[in-house]
Amino acid sequence: MSIQTFKKLLVTGGAGFIGSNFIHFVLATRPVSVINLDCLSYSGNLENLSAIEADERYRFVHGDINDRQLLEDLLKECDAVVHFAAESHVDRSIIDARPFVKSNVMGTQTLLDALRSSGQDKRLVHVSTDEVYGSLPLDKPELKFHEESPIKPNSPYAASKAASDLLVQSYHETFGLDALITRCSNNFGAYQFPEKVIPLFVTNLLEGKKVPLYGDGKNVRDWLHVLDHCEAILTVLEKGQSGEVYNIGGNNERSNLELTQAILQIMGQGPEMIEYVADRLGHDRRYAIDAEKIKRELGWEPTRSSWPEALEETVQWYVDNQDWWRHVKSGAYRDYYQLQYGQRLTTH
Ligand code: NAD
Ligand code: TYD
Image (cartoon, rainbow, N blue to C red; front, side, top):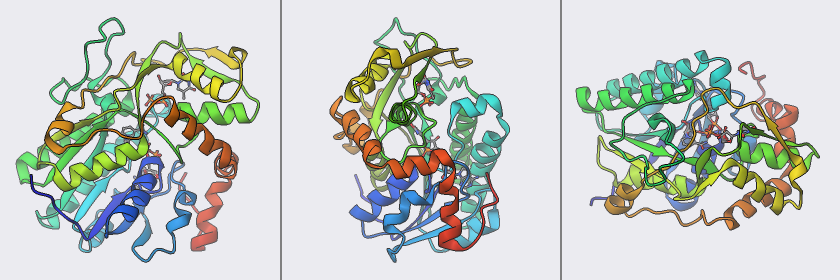
């Protein structure tokens, strides 16, 4: 297995949850520079990156992945792309799918075209999700998603990610683009926007509010620590085989009720804080990942996701970083860009 090294990475969506963790991780572990291209949609938060703002290996560019000229200009400086930029929340895609098609499908296609015209030598890692495989039944625990499982997305979010995956594969086959796809399960950790279940529940409890559990609470997700995901993405970038798909998972399946009870216990609260609410439309029952391929071929497996310790650590992060999530919940995080860069944010 050959190992590739890179001098400068273009990271799209680096102001979001996983992208910002990835930038911290890669700057701390590799001698690379990073350009972070992010349009600062509602989930983009430059406060996530305040600690490395002065690092001369890091540069933020405010822009959209639908801007082909900007992408072509930035690609001249870079030798690889790690593509996180996307609309990422299932509930929002149920309310309005259009931004998902615009960023996830058209944005990815624009990036692929920009990569094509910038030459064939730049590697792309497209960060995707296990949700493209659809849903597994609860009564067949032996079933897991593997890389050859059918693509059967259910939510508009998952459908838009599946479309972007297929575009990436088509550009590899048709134009020989050096592209790889990762499909990961649910992440948890620092800097996650408090609309996703773990930070929403923890911050609600810190505010004295109840936690809204959808349906019967029996839906199952596989939970992976975000830094394990970042390490897996970097492993795929450096060691992966062009054109391949790699599943990434934590082997850590929990029902939502089990997860909620664990959060309540860590925070010293009782079951009266659970509010059972109407189920999400088309709510996928279970996700489970078979991550044997990345372990066997590239030697990656999770080391930071042990349960419940990793969950306790994450809860503690939100307890210790109340300014961070209070700025997000109040909307004050949107002012950070103006303070640092002197311009008002016009995107939402
Ligand atoms: P996030 O919503 O926290 O961050 C997304 C970032 O992309 C934001 O900073 C946003 O401003 C930026 N962005 C959105 N549209 C853009 C555009 N058109 N141009 C430039 N920037 C744009 O999401 P996340 O949870 O960090 O997810 C990152 C990626 O990982 C997504 O592609 C998602 O599908 C994938 N993923 C997420 C999870 C998870 O559990 N969160 C699991 C597997 C895969
Ligand atoms: P979420 O964090 O939105 O991730 P995803 O939909 O990508 O898996 O939700 C995780 C699980 O938690 C999912 O089964 C839906 C459930 N959930 C709730 O029960 N209540 C909530 O308020 C939210 C946001 C999610």
